[in-house]
Image (cartoon, rainbow, N blue to C red):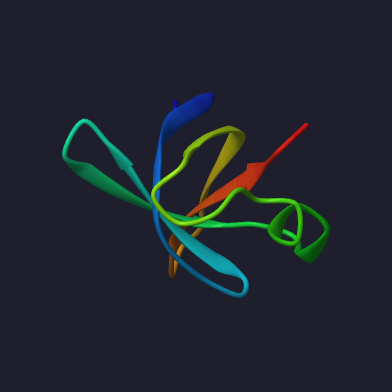
Length: 65
């Protein structure tokens, strides 16, 4: 389980982010309410996460609070 991610914001394109955590890039889907409150590219960000495993996909959702 991935409960929280802290790293550098490498890419952002609504509604997805790429967070670099010590050289590993995590793709995270975020709600637009969180997306608009993110720091700039290259800045540190911490997201609380929820990992969803479905029959056809594995998705990591992130939230600022």
